[in-house]
Length: 250
Image (tube, rainbow, N blue to C red; front, side, top):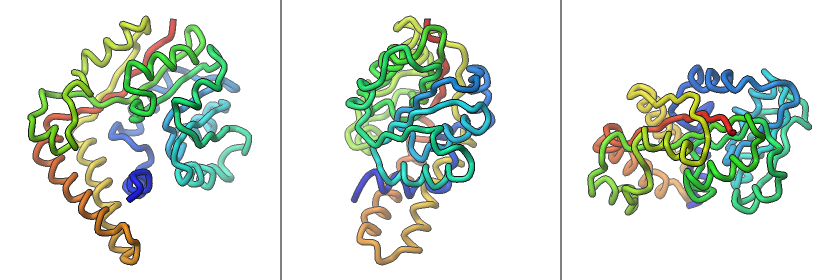
C-alpha cells in the first residue's frame, strides 16, 4: 500500500491536513501580513489549499514542494479558476533535494506544517527555512509535541517510535529560539479540534473503502485505519499534541 495514497485519501475532506482550525491558522498568517508579490514557500504542501488561499487573499507568488504527485494534481485542479496559473510553482520532489535549488534569503514567508520529517526533523527544517527566508521574514511550522511522556505501549503502537522524536510544547518553541528565531505566536490543537481531525481522517478511509471495494488496498487500508483509531483513543488523544509556531527570522 502506498503511504502517500493512504494519506491523500484520509485527508480528502480536510481543508488543511492538520488539526488546527482555519480561524487560528489564518490569524497567524495575518500576523505575517503578506503583501502582493511576496514570495512564499511551502514544504510538504500537500494539495496546496493554504497556498491557494494566500494567493487569493494576498496575491503572493508561491512555490510548493510535495513528494506525492497525486496531491499536486489535486492542487492544480483545486486552483483552476481560483488563481492565475502562474501564481504557484509546483515541484514534485523530495524536500531535501528540492530546497537546495532555491536561492538563499529569497522568500518572505516559509511554511512547513506537519512535514518536518521530510527535512530530517524540526531543527533541520527551521534551519533550512531560516536560510531561505529573508531577514525579518516569517517562518510558520506545524509540529507534534508531547502533552505528557508517552507510554512504552503507545510508542510501540506508533511503530517503534522514540520519545525523542517530539518535545514538550515549551521545548518545541525553544528549538526556534536556539536557532536565533523570534517566536511570535503559537496555537495548539484543542481536544475538540483533535477529535474533528481524527474522526474525519478515519471516516474518509472507511467511506473510501466502502465506495471502492475492488481497490486491492482496501484490506490494508482498513487494517491500518482501525489500528490507528484504537491507538488514538487509547493513548494518542491524551498524549500527543500538535502546535503551530510562528517565528520571525533575524
